[in-house]
Amino acid sequence: CSGRLDNRESWDYIYERSDLEFLKGRKYSKKRNHLNYFYENVDFVYEPVRQEDAQELSLALDDFSRRKAEKGVEDELVREEIDTIKKILPEIEAIGFFGGLIRIDGEVKAFTLAYPHTQNSVEVTVEKADDSVRGLYQAINREFVASLPPEILYINREEDMGIDGLRQAKMSYHPHTLQELY
Image (tube, rainbow, N blue to C red; front, side):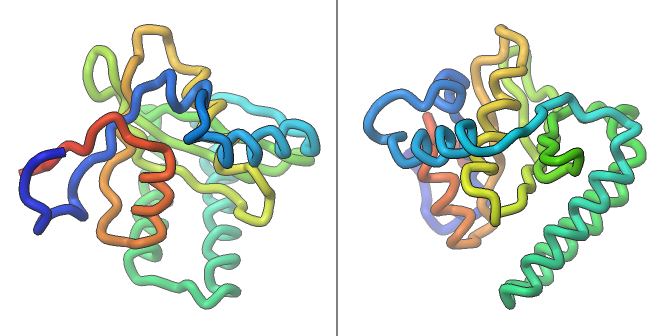
């Protein structure tokens, strides 16, 4: 992580697949605790995102927005992000996106979208989950990574846009490297 810090909000967070998939070691104990709680207490189904899921994913985004608004966390950047995601949902397969979702009681409660980045990496561009379900963010992250083909060794989870909470969440997964973008 060398380089200038003045452009820090646009650096990409690159993770080793094995770190995100297995959460080994003491540094991941909090993540494992949340994940284990989820696995032990929530009846869920993980499945790949399909084009036919676009309407359900859009409804999940509406729920995400509503929960943020209820907490007083309405942000123009988040609103723009959700609007953009909604616009691409009907075309995710055509533009090369793939991902996974988690259903709880038949409802989409979390999903992630990514695209191939290099021969051995993917870039995750969207990850949304119902934060009222303990361990759901950890579960969608882990389940998606575990579903990737074995040749995928690195996960690029993009920049934090200078948002403190997002930066903290990304750092809590201990990136392999931060890649400065020019």
